[in-house]
Length: 131
Image (tube, rainbow, N blue to C red; front, side, top):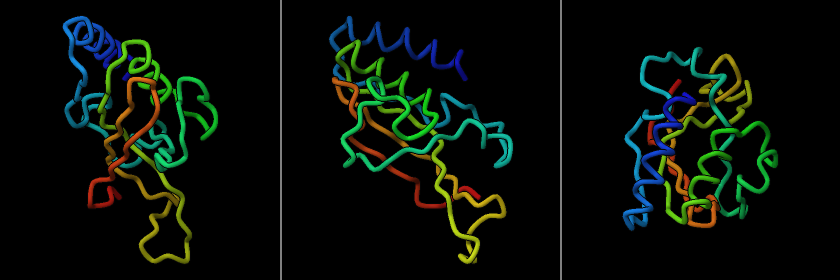
C-alpha cells in the first residue's frame, strides 16, 4: 500500500505543478482489490464525519491510528490541491444488531476528500456494507 501512496505522491506533485486543483484516485487504487474482509481489516482506519473539523496532517492521532489519512492530508496541504481517494473505513457495531459482523465492525468502501489545507471535507460510504 505504501508503494501505491508513493506513486500517488509523485502524481499529486506533478498535477499540482501543472496547475491542477484536484486529483481523483480510482477505486481500490491504494489497497488493491485482492483482499478479503479479514485480510484488509488491519489496513482500515476510522474515518470520522467531516463535520469534526479535522486536519489529519496536523493531528494524526485524534481518531486513532490513521497513517493513510495523515499522509493524504499532508499531500493535499503540501501541494495545495484537493485529493479525493478511496479508503477502507471501519465502524464498531453492537453484537445485539443482527447485521453486525462477527468481528464487531462494519467495513465500508469509502471515498474521502481533503482540501488544499489538508482538512477532511467529505466522506462517502458506498451504499452496500462490505461484510
